[in-house]
Image (cartoon, rainbow, N blue to C red; front, side):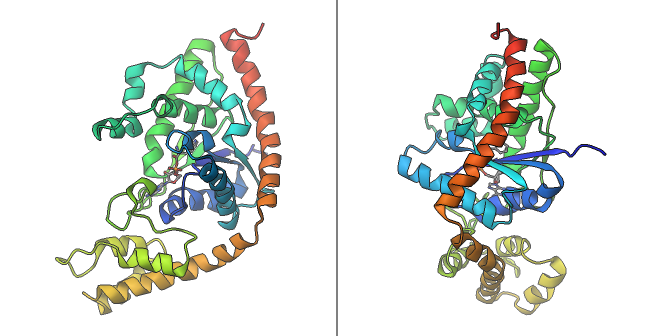
Amino acid sequence: MEAKKRLFTGLQPSGQLHIGNYFGALKPFADIYDKHESFLMVADYHALTSLKDPVRLREGIIDVVKNYVAAGVDPQKAVIFKQSDIQEHTELAWIFECLVTVPFLMQAHAYKDKVVKGLEANAGLFNYPMLMAADILLYDTDVVPVGEDQRQHVEYAREAAAKFNLGFGQTFKEPQEKILTGIGTVPGIDGKKMSKSYGNTIPLFGSKDEISKAVMNIVTDSSGERPAIVYAIHKLFRTDVELEPLYDTNKGNYKALKEALVEDIEKFIAPMRERRTNISDEEVKNILQDGADKARAVASSKMREVRQKVGVAL
Ligand code: TYM
């Protein structure tokens, strides 16, 4: 029998999960994870590049695991763990950082965006792609389901693998990103990429009121008959064939279209929201403990090989 392929993805626990995260990464993962050997990571050390609030970080970690499970990931079928529990991630990141150059890392979008805005990037943000490369490569990952904004990071992981393999012999598999066509970037209510940092999100587990408030604030362009952003978000919940008659009969009636969108989001989310309330913090801790044991077994064996190859193991 052919061995199952390895799937790996991660999300930062730095704020409320939004429908961009869900359709860009969580759903593509949840749709196929049980046919693969799957790893789902809480990227808490990545979050530390921007979040400096221990209370919010702790809450965020618990929240993100509840979100995974409520979104349909069975912790018995996927390894759900947190990055900081497996020290091999930061250890391998260091080794990669010693292999790549500063100009190479200066090309990273997250770093460049900060600099363009005149903000000071911390060294963690600068090295971010190498920690993410370590996350992915430690597990001999084949496929990484992510949104479009993470494409470059997966390329960085491939480059890190290639550099290491060239210098020390074949060790790491080169992973492939899996970006759903048409869903690579979910727009926010202002039409830019939906992102926590832009404040333009529709929360996945928000109350109906919160969702309604966000949807009513979607920017509509008065020049066209069909509000493009409303339609783009609506398409995540219904097919074009279903949407055509609705948008035809409500030409120019943005309020009715937005109300229809709220109803469709609500119908979709209500069962997940319900499932989420039944997951206790205690359960989350057990899931993470169990996940850490499984992840550590894989990561520590890979790291033993790496330490031998680079020459630090005597
Ligand atoms: P993060 O936490 O910013 O986002 C989590 C996932 O959601 C996707 N996403 C989107 N997809 C479509 N449209 C949007 N508007 C949108 N906004 C976010 C992201 O592409 C991502 O897939 N660096 C990662 C976390 C990470 C990781 C990893 C991912 C750390 N290590 C290893 C994969 C493999 C991040 O910050 O994602």
